[in-house]
Image: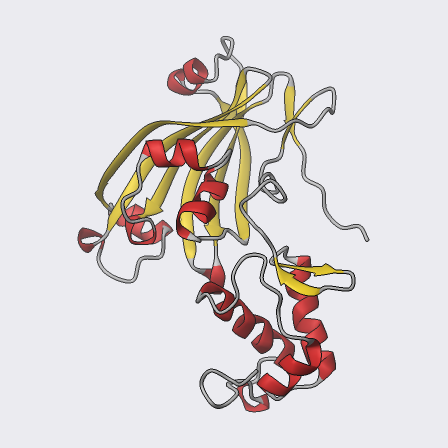
Length: 254
């Protein structure tokens, strides 16, 4: 397969390891639609020729993207772009589990939705490149339920330019989760998140929506979600009930 720009952009001279440059280049190609969900990538020798790198560099780059869940290896069929946003990886960023340890899929619902101009703080959190007064955002409230219990309440801020024509009805009908809806409706993929968590007393509003008893505490999680090229997709503040549920995060392993 010929290079789209006629020359490889991957060079030793820029100080970034070749496999990281190739990983970023592959991510950009996927984001631009060169390869879509479910598509097979060229073979490793073809990629090595295309980008003028070694097979080992290709394998390292692909391995990193497989580990991130963006690519999948299929025995005898090569490497494919993962079908993210569907049932395969729909709950990888959801960590609330009943105390009995039985993991279930939550039910998501957008309960409030509005569009407006970004505040300076919202523009900062979303890393907007132009002044807040020139940027529109969506603000929405989302509830996740397990076993009929409201377990997670989120106030989500989205950059409107990534989601033209978005509405609560679209989000609620597109998929079981917001991230699945982002992918299905707009091809916007959440690749990673940064979460900051602390325990705190529940406010009256949070206690009411999560149906908490008097004096119950919650976990507050402030999350920034990133897509291709570390583009900020959303910023959210989430409150998680701790009565009967806990936050489970698994790391490491083979």
